Length: 556
Figure 1 (cartoon, one colour):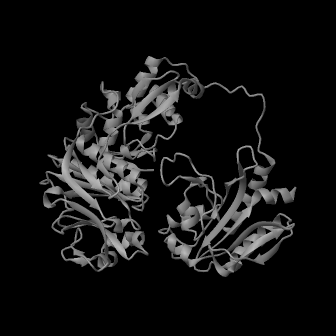
Figure 2 (cartoon, one colour):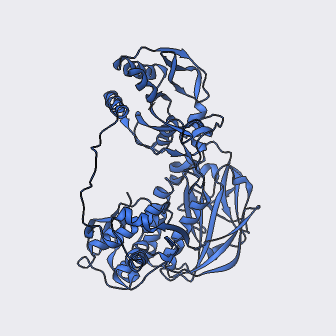
Figure 3 (cartoon, rainbow, N blue to C red):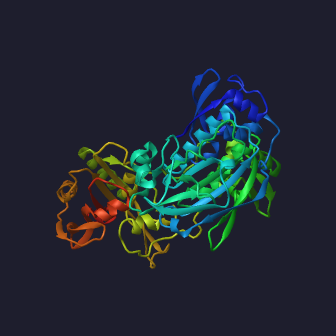
């Protein structure tokens, strides 16, 4: 979870009321799901438990969230955005490597030491946590007075372009930056496998940045003499770049900056960013009462939500609420109801023992899953609990598989969560991709749900339990995966056979299926090098997947 360093004096200026440790109310900390993690004079560390609220990861964000607690501010904070004549062209050469960019301008900003500290912190927290270590989102901030519009976002060959990276004094090619610059070495894996790298460049062919690696020394150095800023956010999901841009722009506007939009031209369509148009969602009164256990009046609900920076309108049988554009965490009415309870105060809710007619217990299948879970740690494997939601890129493209029918989300909030998984190995590969900086070997497993299409079922789907296991190690091979299979099935007294099988996710000749009672229980083998490259993993991996539901049927 993000830990935010803030100054109480700086926080007081932004809130408009003096805040000390004595009057920094515990309830105010609860509003941001935080805990004070350390105190050093005027500086405090806040451990923010809300990993889905990047808008809170700075002094400006915390001040904005707790202002209604100390002042009469209510509803959505308004941000005025003027249209500028600045144009940003997105060249289609970036489509494969990093396709999206959002941008904005901040004018007449007074750069202070506090601002610089918070800007760096916010930029890094967004990139590391929200942007998954810059993989999906990364932001750059520049001295706009040193740039000449129009701006272009384009991919160049590794030796085609030179510029002086931030912190250096000599020009380097894009390739040299990845080899010699500390940030290039740290994030080079994000551009691995591409022959062109994205660059932000102005009308005079002066490079501003090489996203998501490094800014240029010429435009990327922001000092107390800087008056006007250019902000760009690049990534793999357009909506995520918009959210990150809005958060940074709002933080700078809270410090007195004037926001101006940039016209971003994608060819087939044009958008203006940043855009602070509020988002909307409807919440039924019956759902509010059901989940809170309280029958709150419209006036009470309106007051509670306005303190949480919502605008409230009443529809026939529900509330229609608007919320800030940078609140990407609100995906369902239950998220709004959670904010109602936070505003009301959990400590004011009287707990009541549920009156249940039955006593719950684990199903036989779940008890069987527990047995399997207890067997694998003996091999040194670490259990994971991944989301059932994923996307087709992880399920098929990265796994070197042709697309096949799977359950899709009708209106996905993000491109990262568009499908229900139909097997678990891709989830393990995705996990291993995001832990390449950790010590090897890495051995992980998961017993979880997969969802398959079944037109004959009442819900048109079947939910089944699967087991997946993977070992990332220089010694990972077919035999090690076979040992796990043998250990598991022998321990469960299951007679089985192994037959060679061809599978595009595995190396040819190094993959097999597991058969018991003439039914295929699963498969295992050595992961195809192409799949390893797609997931930016340098170590060999062997993996297996078993249908636990089928295994349970045999065991019965």
